[in-house]
Length: 189
Image (cartoon, rainbow, N blue to C red; front, side, top):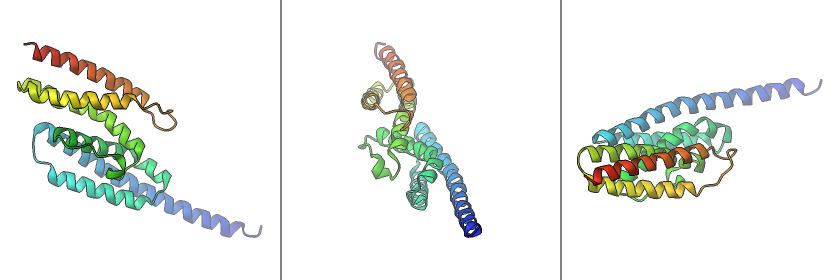
């Protein structure tokens, strides 16, 4: 059949290139996820994380530039973007900085919203540490930020086909209520 062989070879070449990009996105995503977890850990233990944060940001910017708007490849990097957002949002909250949005972070809105939801659990961990150290003032500041994030998160009404947020909204609500109970217990002593 005329043109079949050439068309098939062209398609095979394009698919091979897509596979290489996907493999690269997955490999680089693993590195970003690891760096994000290192940043979150450093925040919890109170150690300097500036260098790791810079490396994480550089890796994310590099990955996003390589994805070139390819939605399939962005899907391969979604978990990394979500972890990245979680680490960046936690860092902003703990350091009382304005929260950066998804466009400022250079990631997708879906990943940013999912990272925002996950940050609530990490903020809780910081609050619990503050309470254990008797720093109720700082715990109250962080709890106010956590509540504000949770309230904003609850306003999202998006189909699961766009972003699977409903479960995370429910989990976040539970985390806030548990933290509120812990705060009341600690502040009433």
